[in-house]
Length: 365
View (cartoon, one colour):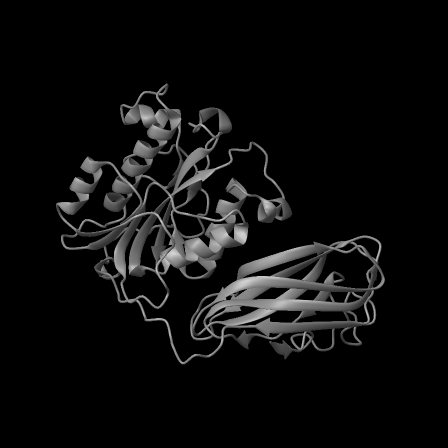
């Protein structure tokens, strides 16, 4: 691991952790530390925070990984984060890893602040970067899809529109939940088995998204993951070159096969932890060409109330919070997301496990 200075972004600012940082009072009383922006080798990486001699009876420390691409006009974006409760006996040591996926040409910094008031003190604070080994191998660069060259193609995510407002329609889908109204549009019976209904709805939403967002050229190369209905595959194969892949893990990042579109109406294999689910999303989207479209079928827990980010990170089942976090992270990584439309719980079709269907539409810019 490579140790970095945790205070060199604002060298003069004192930390909210008593005795650390610079000598001048910080304008932000919750500020704890902020590294400068560092190059990190491409791949799975993490910042590791070490606090030694910790004493605290209450409070919470939050950390954010910020990304910045110097050779672009993009703003600094949040790509990962973590938080930990501060309750430690005198002299305790605390280690917190914050995982993220580093990209070529992007710089990363770790920022820490008190998200809840605290009486925390510590003897030392260290930050290190744990990055992939330099093997001399580099991920192949994705080619540009014809979809990226079409000046008439619709934007997947209109400016500043993360959430969709207004009626959701099947013929022009956004990133949306499966509802009784939509399955009625498709002529499906509301009382049929929820699993089958959601599957057919997801296939229809993915097909309609291809048309809505301009993926109508002959000869496009597409990847379908998981099982789909026979007539569904026939509709696609008539005008495009289709590669089928059974359920399983995504291809290696070293794989040089890229696609104009990625269809996963039945979803994809994910682990029981939020980090594993996010890594699977990243790996699958890495198969897209520049300008390529992905339609991801998901199943999520239809809570009427939002849950905390701490609960989300520990949840074994995908939640609407987590889907929203994916959208923000992907936007920060240069993807475009069709606005999110979460339907009220009373309108949702659910499967035998009580999970609702959702299709997320993503474009690689």
